[in-house]
Length: 298
Image (cartoon, rainbow, N blue to C red; front, side, top):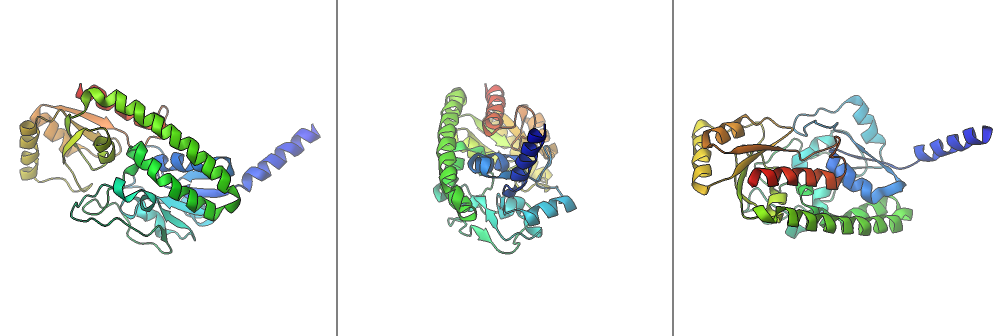
């Protein structure tokens, strides 16, 4: 019995000494944990169902952020608010994505972001009016493109784990390829369909699987379209023969519902964040949404 107690205490101490990494939303947490593996623990700040737009950091969050080995966040215009609290290693994941994979809100802006490490808080909030679309995790191949950069960042933080990080990245890369092929086959029957979205949150997925995005009802969350704009969207839906509007589970969707109802088309709610039963792993999250998209467009 004493041996068992001693072993349990030793195991607890080893676990407590593991590097702690912090990120913001669940999809980023599961991607980073795939590469970190058993060499550390990744803590996600936002609870399931919380929106990156409205979440306010708690004192307990601040303590976790300040004591973590590093904080990984999506992009300044997605979850840059996490930089309100200091950490010596603040890593912006969007800068690790292959430039050719990025989607821009303002297509006239051709230069991708370059700073992969921030010493001080920069822009906060969630502004979609310009710049790069930060929702890169909705496409498995875009996620695959950031793995080499993620391995490099983790290896710099934990050099003795480099071999493990590379092995985990190779395994996860194969998993992402398999998921991509599964999604491609699943969505082939609805390829070429025209859709609209309530907010700019699933563009990478639609582009990858050849689903044509006609428009975004509320390009900046919290800034609803004017009556004139709504009328224009309704006309656009009818003229372009849009099959469905997809809205964001964690955000208000009043404007999108008005357009769908007036145009007489389906509205379907997607979940880009997951973290609940059936949407815990990366594969589960994307397959869940793919099934909803397939059903709505058939």
